[in-house]
Length: 321
Image 1 (cartoon, rainbow, N blue to C red):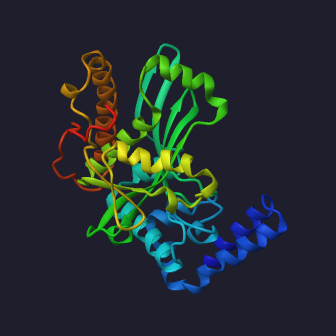
Image 2: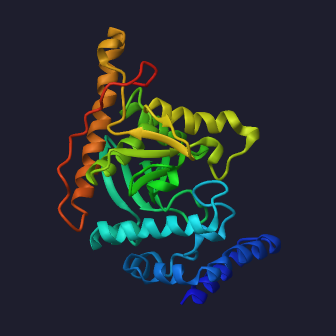
């Protein structure tokens, strides 16, 4: 079974990689055999066997086939522990309708709204196997164009240096591509003075709160799998800077700890002329967070624990409102 999955991956990548990259891909993925028992346990999980490992997925073991996974420099044993923790959590937590939507049907709609002829929606789906920045992805679409992506995995708290069983680890925070100018213009017209990145994080917050989680971890820029010292400003803004806007506090290992609900500057501390638009921005985030929370609560295998409503608390003065 494991060899069959590896062979499928090697054949798929042969058409996509040049020879040297293909041979390197084979060498990396062969590490799966060195941890045979752990990967046999992974393959036996119902969520993997019935959903993740179906023919459309040509890289079941992407946690080892890539140069890095989730965090730059993460050891093979820790990568395996992370992927097992993620899919064991998915299996134990969510029902079959969730798994079908996320892994087979293109994604679970967390929030959707129409504005005139335009359609806006946030989807939760299986992460791309062509990168290793999280096994799940939250995507904000405007008229079918991606305006933002937030990728994450469920990991054991110890990996992030936290005394918690499982936390969401946010490993990618990526904006739009250049072909989305018209879609972004439609977004700005429908949601003035707002940001797709905050829409995605509001959905992430709704997911976490539905599961009784009050913290997430966002990856440090220097720990990102694609970190490039030549682009330090870009990575710092996209990661460290964004997590700090949400009230994130740097942890000892790999990331920023962000308390939920994420912190916001009190409206009373803002200039009067900015309060109305800030309140409108927050109303959109609250709508998205509540929609995502309700969708996830309806996707659980067991009844969810009592949850607090999506009501942001007060933040340090530098936090965005």
